[in-house]
Length: 499
Image (tube, rainbow, N blue to C red; front, side, top):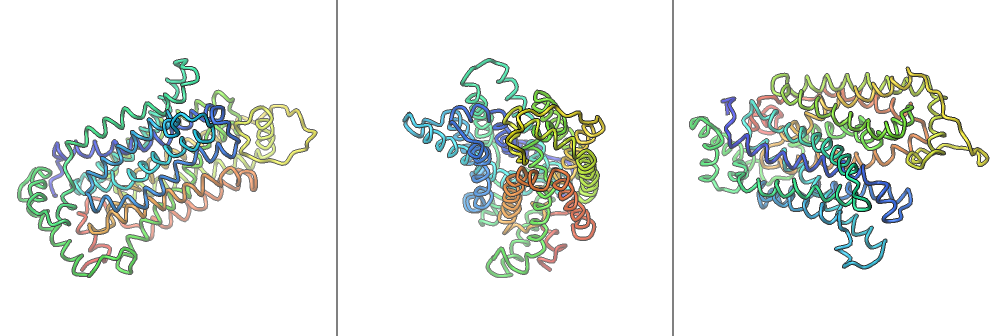
């Protein structure tokens, strides 16, 4: 696909597939505005609330690990339709969890039902993180593949921003006890639109070739590519690649031949979470309050984080095909290191004041009680600490730069890169492996973050994240290949998978 122009079919299909990413971001972030209501409705302890908030990750990990099977057997498009249905069911079920318990008046059963529907939504999130970029990578021309696949990441951060804004708008509507239901239920609208829009999307031509449906694949390629000669050449390249793959024998994913793409996918996905990005996103209000922000401001600042994420992702979207993946990762890695070091230094220099802030917050409300600090039973009153402005602004600016670095580097590159390094026959499995690694480490890092804050302190936590990002910078410099504008079939030769 040498032609850099994008056909209307490719653009429209990529935008529709990326809606899976928008729902991914919305479903992940929407629960942040409902935690107080869920605690009251289901009579949750702090431990139960934490498990409730993270319950969707169970489905996400399962979805990332297993969605490859329907994607390979049924096709990319039918699997996206399935994901849209899961989002819709999760939205309605989370808003009205009692429907599963046949209106039995049992708080415990209703809570279990709610988590069941959240896990269904999580499965959709995990599935979308695999299939949306996979599908787009297989229909996109090489020169614009980075831009089109990155639309999924753009929509993820846009979905997070939409969830924050949607929660704020619904919260201002004075809907009373049903407010939290509306926050979850509104997701059914974009899920339904995603389902309807998919009807006009074609199947992946590479999947059609793999299934021996050559006439359909060639006809589709001529619609996707604006030049008939290029379409014929692309069809021939896909066939030759498939023959070369199958000549190697039965496809076994975990084998020596695929060691390079497997290692690359696992590394970029692992570094993504070892930066601490999701821990910061999940616990941003708590971090901001420890840094000296008021309770009200701590709830508003995540909207600025969402906006920063959105804007920087949009900038990266238009740079990724021109600059390449490695340059964006260089910039992102340096941004990570500088911002995390600044936050760590602030928490070190002003440790006494920040520790006093933690104690003050714990006694003022239970929202920040995830941080465990030793204290005497006689301590009943703690004065609000006077944190120097240098410490407050250092943490706040450091975290904003951290989010910007993530959006411009890892956030823009991860799903594009993983979709590019695997050959056709195992691309779905490869995308699933990368996504599984991403979500499994997400659960580990975000789950241990509040515990580590109490055990070793915020400074040590952020310096640890900084150390991992130094390792990422070395990996980018010495291991990561550049993949921009390289046809998917040629990438196999570059990585030594085929001769």
